[in-house]
Length: 579
Image 1 (cartoon, rainbow, N blue to C red):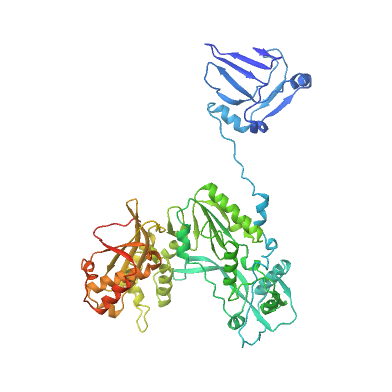
Image 2 (tube, one colour; image 1 turned 90 degrees about the horizontal axis):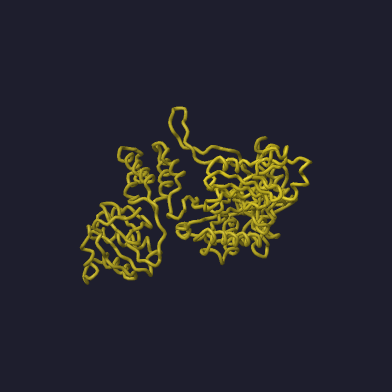
C-alpha cells in the first residue's frame, strides 16, 4: 500500500508481519547521509519537496526492535505499480550496501577520524629548522668562561675535497637561512671545520673470506667544528645528568607513554653576545660565528640539561622524565597521560621549545628509552641491540673482546653471575697475557650471548615493601640479587656480581660469604638504606657471627659496616625469583 500524501509505503508479508517505510522520519545516523545520491524528475520535484525521501527507519510490526536503523527508499517506479514513471531513486553508499547484504540486526560503527592537534599546541611541534624560534635568553643562555691564563688560538682552514666541500656548503647555507650563524671578519678564537662520516646502525656483513664482521655503514658525512683548543681553555661546567637506572625505574610499570624529542636541541639555546665570537670557525666559504649553541663545546650538554631541568622542574618525576633532548611522558591511564602530554606541550610552547615531529610517539604502550624497552611489564633489553650482538663473529683480537664485553656489560643488570661467566674473557684483557681464544673462552662467549637472549624483565622497586637480597660466593666471584616479594611473588630488581682478586680468593669460606653480603649492601645502598632488608644466604654460620664478640679484625670491620642497615637473616633454600 502506497500513501503518497502521507509519504509511506506499507508491505504486507503475511502472518501478521508488516513492513513499513516512512520517508518523513529523520534518520538516526545523519553521518551516513553523504553516502546517498538522489535523482528526481522535474515532473514530481515539487510534489516530493514536501516530504523529501531520505534514509528512513525500517520498522517491522510484530518484532521487538527494528531490523535495521538505516534504510534507503527504493526508486518509486512507474509500475508500483503503474502510478509513477520515475520519481526518485536513492542509491545506497558502499557501507550501507555491505550492511544490507549482511546482517541487518547490527550496524557498523562509523569510521573514526584522527583529531587534529589543538591549535594552541601546534607551535610546540617543528618540521624544519626555520620553525626554531630559540629559547628566551632570560630563561637560559650559554656562556663560555675561559681560564685566567688561557691564550687565544687561531687555526687555519683544512683542505676539503669537492665532495666534502659540497657537504659544508649545504650546511652553511642551511644555517645562514635559519639565522643560526652569521659572517664575522675577525676573532681571537678561530676553529677549523672537519667532516666526519655519518654512520648508520651496526650491521653484520661478510668480508672477502666469507667471514661475518660487524660494521656500521656510512650513510653520508656531517660537518662539525674542531673546538678542542677552545675546550681545553674553557672552565668546566659540572651540572649532573640523571642516573639512567633511576630514571628507567620511575618510567616503568605505566600503561601509556608519550616519547618526545627536541628538534636540534642545542640550536634552540642562544649564546651570550660576548661569547659568540669564540665559536668562530673557518671554511672555504669564509669565517662564521654561532648565535645558537653548537655541537662540540665541552659545556654544551651541561647547559642543555640545566635548561631542560629548569623548564620542567615542577613536572619531572611526576609526569615526565628528561634526559638531554629526550622527554618521556607517562600516565596511570589514557586520560591522565593525555592530560600530562597537554601540560608538557603547553610548557614547550610557553618557552619556545620546539619538538621534532618525526621522532615523537604519542599514546603508546611501550618504547625504547636509552637502550632499554619500557612498558607496563617492567624494564627489558632492547632486542634490536641484542640481535646485533648475537650475529657478532668470534673475537680474534683483544679489541674485539673489549668491545663485546663493553656491549654485554651495558646489560649486566639483567644477567645473573655476569662476572663469573665472563671471567675467562676478562683474563684476556690483562697485560702480558697471550691472546688465546680457547674452548673455555668460547664457552664463556656463548653463555653470555645466551644470557642476553633469556634475560628477564626486571621490575622497579616498590618503596612500601621490604627488600630481599640473595647472596652467594664461589671460589673466585661473589654475586647478589636484589628483589622484593609482592603478592607472594618474588620480583627481580637488580643482578650484581664481581670477581675477587688474588688475595680475596684465599679467604676462608665464611669470609667469602660475608664478603658477598658486604658487596651486596654496598652495591644496593641507594635502594636499601632506610628500608627493611631481608638477607638470604646458604651459609648458616653467618647467622651467629654477628653475635660474636671476638673474631677476626676483617670480619669485625665488615660487621660494623652493616650496622647502619635494618637487616634480618633468612634461609635461601630453594627460593625462586620471578623473571
